[in-house]
Image (cartoon, rainbow, N blue to C red; front, side):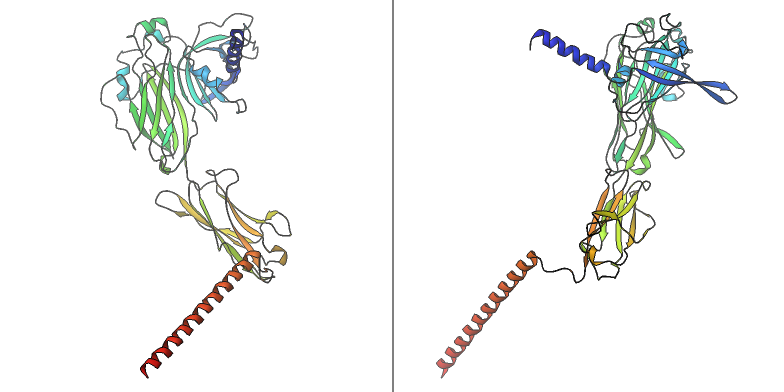
Length: 449
């Protein structure tokens, strides 16, 4: 490839990456309004701009119109990957006060008696959630908004915690892998040089909340020593920094692994990254699923005479989870009345049966109405829909045969011919054997006379 063509291809590729994802994230700024009430004011995050100056937003207070400076690239990179057809993310912004973590196991991160002066000033926390990502970021705004032509506040992303699996769906018995990445930029050059070169120690915490109960699943403090709470349920985290630049920014990994998940392990998982006086947290909603097995009896054929009702159909939907979201439909396919229609008749569902692994089963019943000759060869279908199944669901079927209308088919004729041929051969063999025995008996009698 010629150099000019190569440069053009690189430029086009770069433009594609930069132009991907939303340029502006609309948020709500939430703060205490007193009396137990919260106020919500519009705000926005400018992730990138196509011109040299940011677009004006006269509808926003300049302190709530933030141009994001992200030295680590984690926050901006997450939105470059954001699908164009995905719904707009939900975003909330609020004030943040740096404080030491309350957990004893992470107290080694804050040996000082008070928050260092390097963390003085205004802080904001931004929380963004959608179907494709969940993140929180601590922003350090500049003291004053930039002047005209567009009043805007530049804010640096200091600590960002991110997951690309905000709503994992794990099949029962399989391992759950919940990804987590984070990035840290020292808030000021002075704060970076005052520490030992290289990434700082940090604390990683994974908690689960479900049905009003919550407990610590795993805790880790890479770079620190001291007693740690024991991990629960075989949980493991891949906790560490990805790089060792002397003065940052740094990116890290806190991916969480939980083996052979069961229904009791679903719920809200809170992932928290602790740095000295700074905490970033994001949430994941883990759901456990098990697709049902579907069997239909009697099968594969049912018989009925014209004007009579076929036998009751029983569709067993077994060993599925969760119990919510299950739908059973009865369909009738083929025949003279059309390609597809809803099956008529009385239908009902049994109570749920619970199994030791947490899954459940039930049976769906259908008593079809009396049949007509036009329904000969139609198929009754039991179709099951469940969150663990594809959109079309899972099905089982049985064919209806109307008595007196089924003539012999080609396969039946071939089978009758083969049966007659074998029967004729058997008769001939028996005749030859009888003749042979009679001849042998006569020979023996003549010799004895």
